[in-house]
Every structure is written in structure tokens, then in C-alpha cells.
Image (cartoon, rainbow, N blue to C red; front, top):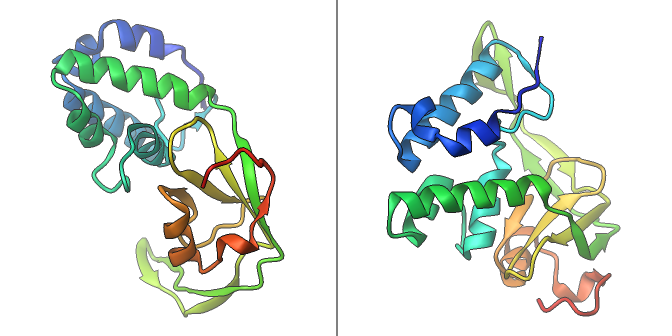
Length: 195
């Protein structure tokens, strides 16, 4: 089953009709329930505008200049706004930006010869259990990507391989500390990038 809806316009015009009240928190709860139902019932998302990926938290941290995204998109928006209407308007603005963003590669790490330990979780009779520790290789190429003039960047593998701390970095210093790759090792693609 493929859910392909154009609900975002309707939802944006009258969120209270969908959520029961006109608050950003009620929107957050509605979207979490929506996402849970889609995942639980294995409904395929076909450009589903109401499905909020985990990466959206990092997008909000990036756009609103937070150091990290652990407080969640809703709390970060509340921290930067003074009213429910302002918070809801900012949420929809940032969601549309997130959906239409265009990546701009500013630097690359090429030939990353680093390893990391990972403890995989496996489904065993319906329960998630820890597997054996695995030694894995960082991706050969990691791209540093910006989308706007905001401080920070995103670090992603060019091959979609996962690695620890992939995603949003508010500064190059944090990237160096967490990934262990020095700025001198970067291949700068955009000489106008200020890191």
C-alpha cells in the first residue's frame, strides 16, 4: 500500500482541525502518531509530506543555531518564538525549507583510513538484543555539506554508509573532536566556505 497524499497544504491551513488544538505541541504529537502508524502498518511513503524524518531535528538545530538537536524540533522552535502562532508559522516555514533544500558540498574527506567499534542490535523473537561488537571502517569519502549561510554543516558518507556522529556539526572543532579528522586533512571544494 502506498500512501501518497497532499495533506501538507490542508494541514498547514487548519492544524487544529487535525490535532484538536492549535499548538505546536499538538502538531508534534499528531505527526509522531502519524509516523508511528505508517511504520507500524508498513505503509510505503511516496513523497509523504507529513512524514518527518529524524534528520529534521538536525535541520532545526542548524537553521536556528543550536549546538545540538537533542531537545527535539518542537522544543527548539518554542525556544526561539514567543507565541503559538509564531511557533506554528516557523515550523511550517522550516519544514518547507527542509523539503526543498539543495545540498552544497563545501569539503570532502577522501581516503578516510579510520575504524570504529559498533554494537549492532538484532531482532531475536521480537526483542532487540545486542550483538557482538564489530570493527567497521569509516566510509572512504565523507562530504561536508551546507544548505544555507548558517553556521555548521552536515557530514555524510558519499556511499550512504553509516558512521558514528554522521549528520549535523555546529562547528569544525566538534567535527575534529568527534570524528578525529583535522581540518588540514579536508579537501576544500568551496574556497568561500568559512569554517
